[in-house]
Image (cartoon, rainbow, N blue to C red; front, side, top):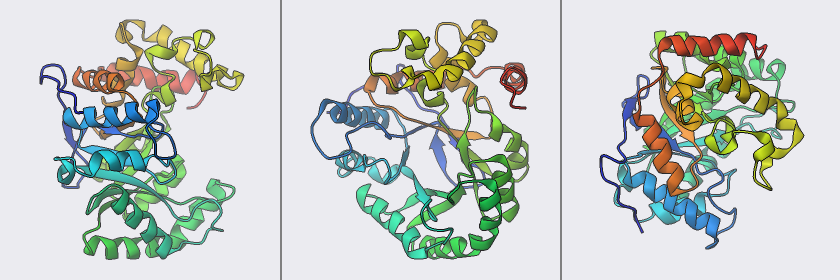
Length: 329
């Protein structure tokens, strides 16, 4: 069932993740929507399975997952007897406390999320934990003080499970820059995980501090949920049933249009490729967590990651657009 590609067609680059001992592929497969939420042999799930196999054959060694996505059954089907299973690095979401936990950290729930992932993914160790602390409402006013209140409990159970050989490194998804700053200040994390793309550049404000402390960064949704792709060049031409056809996404497509206008020469023939290359231009970014649902998407993204990154001038130009045209700076 594996698909063969020549080295010339698909080859993988790797980067060291901060001060860890992990050399991870610059593309991290995230099968959030790569399968049905219940086990079966539907076309979507078969395509997602083939996409994951294709990625592994091409050298991807980094996989992102969450119990929330309910697609690990497909991943388990691929990984159960895969010859490279022991070489892979997994990063999983661990949202404890979650929205409805009343700001209370439960070590048993933390352990549960990891133990179930070890079983589902047929692995002995989760290399990176994407720990998240959530509140209701999920505001900085609640979350900033909460971090200080629970961090020692989090680190205690993490260290215990690390000593058991079940986990490797603790990173966090802070949601906001203030929470990211607070997380860095604790000195308890190996790095941050966050949104980073041509439209969402808030976390870039923390790159300098992360580099100074030799901490890592993993970028989620470098394609801005798929809006920064060739398939979604214009909202009016979206296929029937596309979730981004709703009017609420008009502002996102306006931002895409601005990017297309300003970076016309740099983009060339492919917005998808430019978005991937842009996200990898920052040295602090070790890997891009991308949802890949078909073999064609896998080959296209890996090919894009092979190409040269935009210049530092282009990156700074994008920052200026983010600050001014998007009114976010």
